Image 1 (cartoon, rainbow, N blue to C red):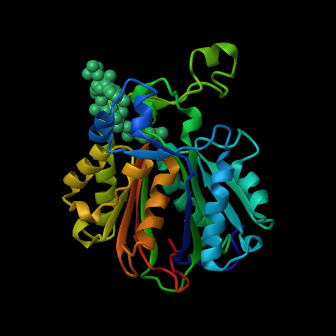
Image 2 (cartoon, rainbow, N blue to C red):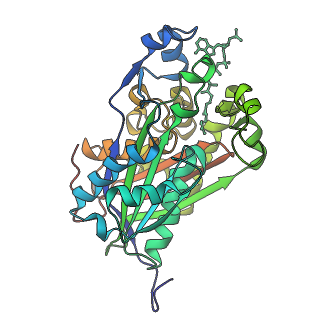
Image 3 (spheres, rainbow, N blue to C red):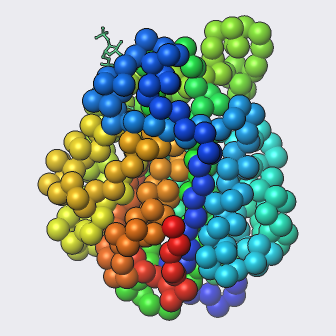
Length: 344
Ligand code: ACO
């Protein structure tokens, strides 16, 4: 419930956290698994290595250290956490929600929460939803957790996509902040359901309940029409970025750092070119992590803050595109809390 007398509060990111599995899978190793080359993967995708979880690792296990790290950075006990939103397309299981599993694992016994599914745009959707809960006074804090174990739905015999993905988790802690010139400023989110035919996982749900036939047909693997997705991804991320900037009276020149979803280096470069933003103002870490789906953006922001690439008062834009189709952009004035002291 929204607390009586509540007004819309300013919301800041008061801590961040991330985690990736220890195991690093290099392009050279992939050369021994499928008909591919390090050179093809580097030049066509920008990925050099990715972190992969041991088969059977649940998303909640990757999320646990990321969230605990953010809470520790903020000096907050798990039991003080009020809301957990997990954004993922690879939950531990259909139900209970991974948010419930995580609540128990970290000892956040006073938090409620749920999972949210919007593929690679999941974290943006989670951030907007968490913002609304904190801004309205429904809760005084929320952990937004972008986590995916994409390797659990990867067909390791399919070179078209097994070279792209990695596993990871990134998290933001949201809290009300006093300064109305800081924090989460605005967001634009979009869906085009007609794009669903190009990026999907057909099996396992109510449409195709799991059976020997669905498994034999490989319907439990992610499927994408790479070229179709490629065509629209850059255009839509650039459009959403421009939309959120113009709505708030800014131009791309005002932006200190653009944090785009990391699906393909060529897509990121195309976004930068469309927006006319120099490469040094664009976060790129796809070379080390591949596409970690919901986790790319919070991992990118966590690293940028830890490296001092973003400072108090800097304008940053987060933008993503993914299955659905879903896409959007979020505008943030960084350095939104006196508590924020990033650790690597
Ligand atoms: N190694 C070597 N050759 C390969 C590989 C590989 N790993 N994969 C494909 N090829 C070959 C193809 O077979 C093809 O050969 P052909 O010309 O003889 O037919 C050739 O390379 C070119 O294939 P394309 O599919 O045209 O390659 P493209 O340059 O489009 O790159 C890729 C493919 C990387 C998938 C790209 O299209 C892409 O990044 N698409 C967008 C992905 C994305 O944004 N996804 C959204 C997020 S995911 C989510 O929401 C869960």
